[in-house]
Image 1 (cartoon, rainbow, N blue to C red):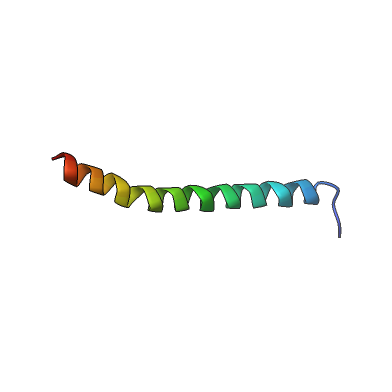
Image 2: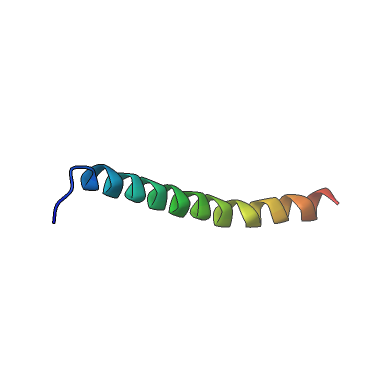
Amino acid sequence: MYYEWSEAKARRQYLIKFASVWLAAIALGFLPVWWLVQETTF
């Protein structure tokens, strides 16, 4: 069965999944940089 709101719901789930992956990638890329800054600062 097809619901009228299924497209909007799928798009919202896709945006949430994309945002979570994007934030995870930024966190993984930022973590070594932050660690190097901490190492060089102290």
